[in-house]
Length: 89
Image (cartoon, rainbow, N blue to C red; front, top):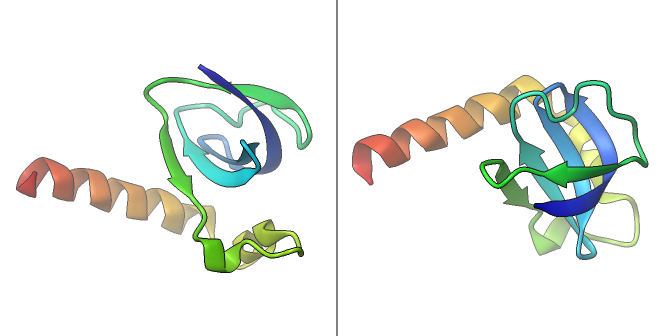
């Protein structure tokens, strides 16, 4: 398991973390529940992790993009990807 700093809690199942100087979206059941920004968290092996594209990583806080995205859409996108992988390999 990896230890990372929480940058933002998106919801109970989705957080934004700083991992090896890169911002990563982590999705795992209950990973954000009871956690706070700035706290360290262990990422479970079965957690889904999504890396930010380099074009969004600037000197400004790149988590500002998440202020405009409803966390529900991130979860829906993840579910679509999972179902697509299962169906089409």
